[in-house]
Image 1 (cartoon, rainbow, N blue to C red):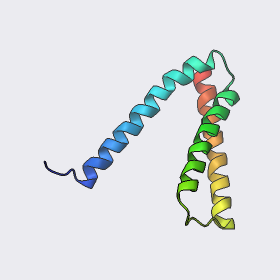
Image 2: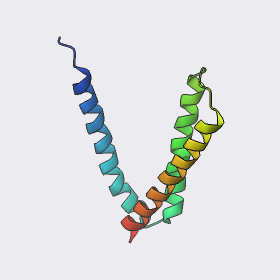
Image 3: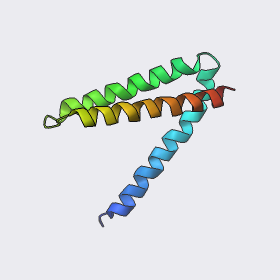
Image 4: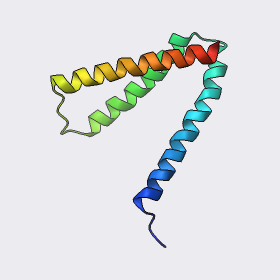
Length: 92
């Protein structure tokens, strides 16, 4: 059987990510009827943080310096703000 190229594999990964993201809108809309935007985002961020901790636990050779930590904190805040605006838009 022929091996798939990296471009084809990447295309499938992007398709899978797009499907997950698209289906998430439906569930976010349903959850918005029962929970507030910050509660939904809190649950999403906790789940994402747990997966990140799992990844960090499996990778023993990762060193996090101050610049990396600050970059992650700024990126995390931007993700939180964008997710909050998105959730408020879906719930409205």
